[in-house]
Structure formats: structure tokens, C-alpha cells
Length: 122
Image (cartoon, rainbow, N blue to C red; front, side, top):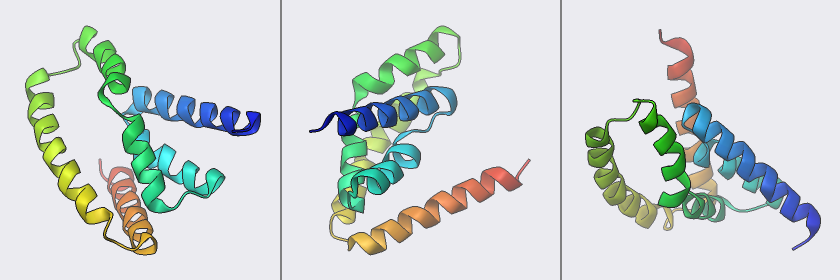
């Protein structure tokens, strides 16, 4: 691994971490596109790497800051987390069977739909 690669990975990690802590996004919206663009990962590789990065210890520290300030309801988070585990398993089993070009298009459409909804609603 070259120094340039390491520095680029550090930048991606910092950008994803800062945006994750700031607005609750980082994996899909930051890491996946940047891994594809800078490292020529295919969609499957980028998504798998993003998921590996977002393991519990990484996000737990950021969530703790929100908890300290009274912005976290553990009941809601717990229910969502349990379902997220099941959904993540099912979604990943399906994703690895899809052609990466199709998966990339599905990914892009979801990003556009979510962005449009957030941008054009009050």
C-alpha cells in the first residue's frame, strides 16, 4: 500500500466520520462513491468495505456524544438496530447475487430519491 493510498484512505475516513457525526451519514453516501471513484472498487467491494468500517465501535463513540446531550432514545435505537441486523443480512444476501452494474444503478436511484425527498419537503 503506497503512502498516497494511505493518505487517501485517511481522508475518506475523516470525511465519512465527520459527516456521520455531523448529519448521521457517512457509509453509503460518502465511503461507497469515493471507494468506487478513487480506488476503482466495484459496487460490491465498496459496499462490503463500507459495512465493515461501520462496525459498532466506530459509531458507538459518536452516538455516545448524542446520548450525553440528551438526543438519543435507546428504546428506538434498540428496536431499529435489531431490525437493521435482520435487514442487513437479508439485503446483503440479495445484493451479492445482483450484477454490480445493476446494483450501482439501484444505489444511485435510492440516493437520488432520498436527496429529492429531503430537498423538496418542508
